[in-house]
Image 1 (cartoon, rainbow, N blue to C red):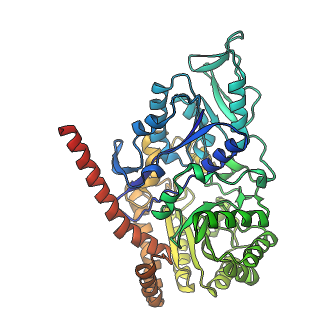
Image 2 (image 1 turned 90 degrees about the vertical axis):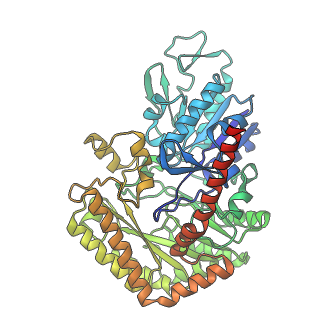
Length: 536
């Protein structure tokens, strides 16, 4: 039996940051692959199976876990599980996953524990040496995980000694995974990294995500899906990878720079199937950058229009502005696109060059004007506090923020720079010993929007960077609300009459004043129940 595990979610109850868990699409692809190969498996979604449960995180009193406790997850693992796979997309979840792996090992001493996802790909040696995890799957995981399963189960003469999987009749240096690319493991005390396996060129060969094995209805009905709420929706992937090499991004380390798109008709087939199966109104594309190839995008939009599925969709992770012109904008709107973002990152041309952000700001504003002619919600992403930033570059960025407010985009996201594991910036700062790989660092993305976060910019202090962020947010929304007050009124009316969030500002409002009130109530009730159990 193979058991796949998704970790609990994390939340903060103060500030402007929003943590919305989303159905784990990567793990759902792995589950579908196991099903296609007739392998027996079970799924434990540590977040989705108890979305209403909020408990304090022992390591940080200002952070809360959403979902099952570690012991509850371990209790649900079938006793016959010989392989246990865990996903870790973002490194801020590593502290809880590490403790989960330890708890699993104490109960399943002979099972193979495998970790996949961005964190396992970026820091496999740390993972293997600081936890009982046996194997890290690097990069795209479907085919590699199958090879790990086959190698593990086909070596019937294996034994486990000192955490090393070995052949009974072979020297201790023999590792049963030696011929598998795309993994990392320990052979005794020796760390071995077999590098990324070649990317799958035809990603339509992968089966659709196995949402039947996940509590997908709980996510949908609780509105726990990335992006703004446009109606009942689930995640979907139309592409994998990104062809660009931004120094602050971990994508090249995870996916290389190969961008692969799906066949438009097959992508729409999936949308049509799941729309009917789960009575959906829309889809959230989890792609790193969906709009690259104009021909492909137009083909996709026309396919959706032709089928008349009556759905909406969004690209909350952002996309490239170069792929937009008036024709593309018209087609995407007609096909149902309602929310997306561009990512200029900085207002300084010099900083953009240093971080290898290849974007033409003039063309981006042309694309913005095309898109704003339609009723699509458009945001922009800004990052401040790059190591290359200075007070002067931040002044250039705030001028860009003001210009974006004047031209009419709906939302802005100002994030403070955090060196993501696997990125060029991360490697550089690690070599300079400006990063300590401890739990404080791993949990630091949860402090994005507080004055607690670290500035990695020598020219700007921690606290000064916080006030730059506040000033930029204030400038954008004051200008935006003053120039277009009817937008705010319309957004509130729409939200309170239909529940639909037209903008990210309304998403924040709903999280801050509706959802957090619910989470606090659930937290109090859970703590009271625990107290009653102890006293009883």
